Image 1 (cartoon, rainbow, N blue to C red):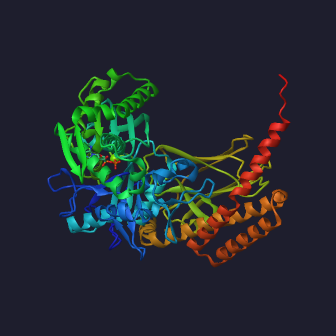
Image 2 (image 1 turned 90 degrees about the vertical axis):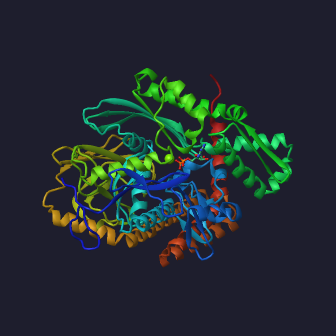
Image 3 (image 1 turned 90 degrees about the horizontal axis):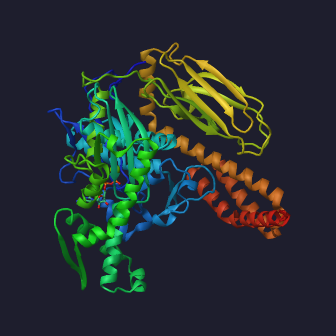
Length: 619
Ligand code: ADP
Ligand code: MG
């Protein structure tokens, strides 16, 4: 087990290179570093400000614009302006269904478990690619301000992010040309910024209250021997400062007796009202009255009214705090420290309510919208080995994972994870009646397993024959303190199980590790492109398979014309698959999906009504 730093330009081992801390936020993102005075500092690329709005705009040529410049297009060109992409990162359509109306751009619904994609013009982007655009901008700003290449970073994520969302964040970093040394929980970073957890003898319980632009979460952490543990988290991913703005807009609409029908037609006016509302909200964090006009609309708001407007939302956040305490089996009195995070905690009413709930004044000395990035910079500094007072734990030098469809590497334990550690993920079959599943274990950073190091392979046998997608196979990786990896596969419905032990470090020299890391960075872009093509292909092939099965089984519910047209769509998709063009495949897949969706519903309705008919009512 080792920790290796490499100079990407020369390929040699190097210690001094800067590692930045990045807060990749839903609303705003920022990058920080440890300055020569050993203090964390947010990078302000001359004149551009500290916060980079997490907004990406694509112009007609398909070039991306990020940050404040992109934000302006939210009004003039909403379909090509992507905001809040963090909500979609590592998510499948199922996860975000029901929230489509919060997004002004098109999210592709392919009705399955695969990750969402966003359609801009004729191109399809994954949230990973879009997040990478934001990270590229942060990287460029840091390089410009520090006048040095920046290749390594620590990136923060919410504590509630699952494995897939964390992996997606890593991939975004990689795509932006960053070597992501660690993914750190936002509440952990915020605590570090306040110096909590830096003293190894400290033992504390901390509540971190994070109210951002569109999301709220509270985390209860415990620190012991410099190790943070998340005891519980709670929150609402659709509650934040934007809701405060909306309440103000509604209030002004009522006060000015504006006609709803007129407003619905005038999206420009709505947007101006929203911006004015945000201005008012911010002003009321330091004054008692806001009084301005938009044309002849009076935009007046006093602090007391504002607090009445937001009280229900704030009460909701406190309910989450209550739940988080219950889940961690603690009372408010047992919390040693409370930390405020997120721009919306600048609102004095929010601060006061949180203080009252926990019965103590929260830490608020550091700017709440910077605190996570500052803490990430401290974590980066610790990883760089610049803090001799802090114990560095053993970490895995390379990622460990398994081969999935199309020869892709699916990382289960990421590189630089502290050991001992365990992680797992659920998989399923891709063919009807599949009874065996081959599990191949690999080590390395490349997207294709063929470029990585194969550690072992075994078959999970005896899966009961079921339709594709029904079996649930849990694959668990357990890496113990001695570096021995146990891989276990278990089919949950039948209980069929298989397990092996491997020593990943066997025969692995520092030189090999170094070379593998350098290769992964130099090939990052082509790797990700290949991965996306393979994923698009697997999806396309799966869709052809399902559509053909569907026609076979349920053809009787369709007209001859419908069957013929479905055939045409399938043919088009097959042609795209043969051409191996990512966007073309996704486009044809989307069209086939759109075309057949009503059929599936029809069959479902019939199935439901026949089930109802068959249901006995004598009881
Ligand atoms: P995220 O973590 O979601 O990216 P931030 O922590 O940057 O978001 O918080 C953004 C939110 O903070 C926005 O709703 C913004 O209006 C709000 N905000 C920023 N400054 C203030 C202020 N002075 N008073 C109240 N709210 C503020
Ligand atoms: Mg945040």
